[in-house]
Length: 106
Ligand SMILES: [Zn+2]
Image (cartoon, rainbow, N blue to C red; front, side):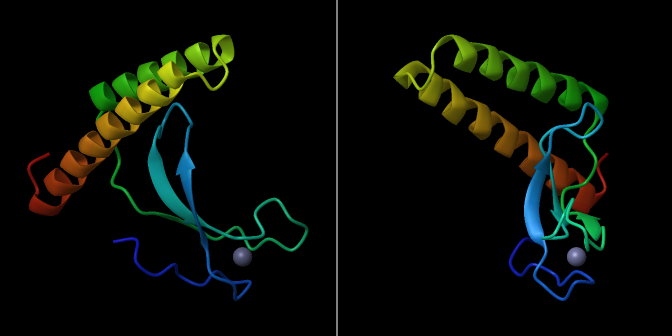
């Protein structure tokens, strides 16, 4: 799904990013490589399907918790372990979401 980045209207490969807005936490998208630059073309395309509300709340809560712990313990091994767990959870949820989306079980 994410193999080749599309070209934006600036004729450069779009950049893979992850949204952390309340509406789309952890949702990946391709965006213009010159984003916020003077000549940005504002290219934007979601990669992941929208998350269900309960999953959004869970991802936001986990992400907030990780940031709180990170602020308290800069780069401790605990933070690295928490971060790994977080990305495993988010990855699993996104994978489930993609499967539901592709096979229409939403
Ligand atoms: Zn562009």
